[in-house]
Length: 351
Image (cartoon, rainbow, N blue to C red; front, side, top):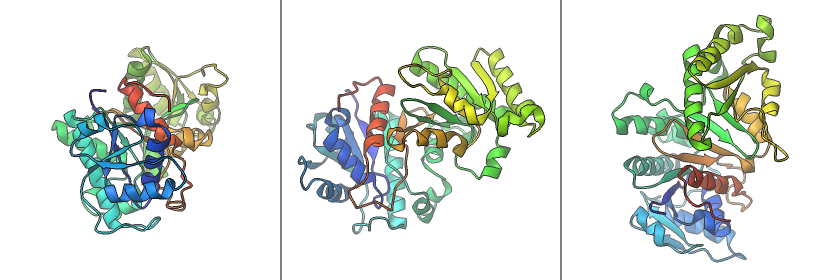
């Protein structure tokens, strides 16, 4: 590895510190060359919580990202950015925790945009804590929107010129969303010809680079039975089908719209056999995320498409209800790190 991978600590009151510590302990080949942007004391507390009867995991303070490249396996390198005045209580909303969690993302994203790190993996933020943190962090519904704004500012571009989309991936399914963190009413209003066509192009470009071929894109309808020819809604006829036709005319391999209750099953890869589609474009957040998460939250990875950097994250939140108990599963974070290495064309490791 010529450049390290940055992992942000996430909200220190959540399970981020615990799953990071477990990932470095249990998957040293995957985490080799990675470092954490966060707080040393918080990670040492997490290590103490998980390692009473486990393999020792020293926490090492590094001064620059390159320090991660010479850190031995099962050693957790941390680049200290800011500091908590006192340890935060597990599972408790805190403005200071939300503010620091956001600042860690800002630092790591700017390092990635400068080319100082190969990729960015983000442990979970708590959106309520982010809102409590105040401006500018409270203006972002989550990681995706924050990273979009940072990328636009770095490139000196209007926000609209850096369109991004969320893709959820596991071993069986890929799903890209037309809209992300908005109300259901606003999500329906976001189903426009331009938004869908833009989503199809972002999906095509990102997956073509990853797969090395033209991806097969299936498109979900918005309404039950994909509108049933206009009986249950006209969005499929008036918006979705025309956008699909336009994408096809521009060389994209797109099919649909299909009934939302069956398209994900058709795209699912299982038993060593690929699905009918490489990816499904879903019209809104829950339509697309429920099938992916049902297949196993511990396997899912969130990939942000459209950014001038590689960003992945685990497919779950801060889990305040189990934070500090030692019960958190690091599988999704390990999968996110592995995906980041794949997207950067780095060795995958065996852990």
